[in-house]
Image (cartoon, rainbow, N blue to C red; front, side, top):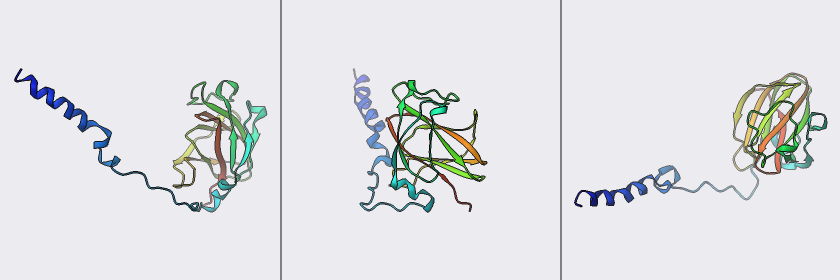
Length: 178
């Protein structure tokens, strides 16, 4: 009994030490966003003027998006979407997705900005483009992630998969050369 009593006392202390409240990075709440909108870089200004657009269910029904215009995409249930190429991370049948098309007028770096953590593929025909950069959007803007691609002139397909919500804010822009 003498040896088991200290163990009984120590076990609850181990749980307290491992609790999330005990980790230093969790000691403060995230900074609040200011009441006034955070200014966006010039190429992302269209994000604040989003318009509603319905996603296509297959390649031939892909909704064409203009570059630089923010949209709020009304997505479809994943089982209703027929992708040109199976997404690497398709999500679950409860997730949402859709098909969009866009035209690239000149070679350069293009960015897909998303308001959520959906999976995207940019395709030229049935060939996926390789992403060249990934980042978070500017704080307090609603842009959750940004994915960059080096693209040549032509028509591209944007496949969205695995979004947790039936709507998704998104925008495709040309990244200014530095």
